[in-house]
Figure 1 (cartoon, protein in one colour):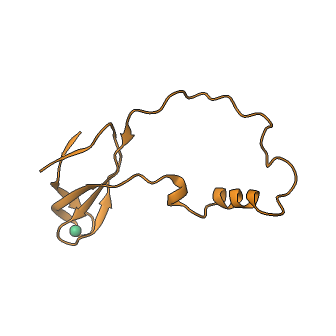
Figure 2 (cartoon, rainbow, N blue to C red; figure 1 turned 30 degrees about the vertical axis):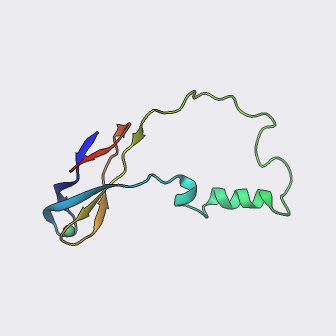
Length: 104
Ligand SMILES: [Zn+2]
């Protein structure tokens, strides 16, 4: 998908349409976005001493995989930076694209 580097968009801070710079942010995985969430604390607990009894609610055999193959495209994660107040806001909804290109 080809995108312009700058567009006119509504800025919720200035409450009017201003020039915005578009940048593509890297999609973070859940582990990097929430480094000390419940799941990661639990994983640390499983590795350490005093691990408790049993299999932590797991089965002895791994589940059969249902989804096959990798997705070919990723959802866009665009950030819009207002040129007046320099605040950034995110896009409402990402669309699946293989590649994001900026023209000029
Ligand atoms: Zn603004």
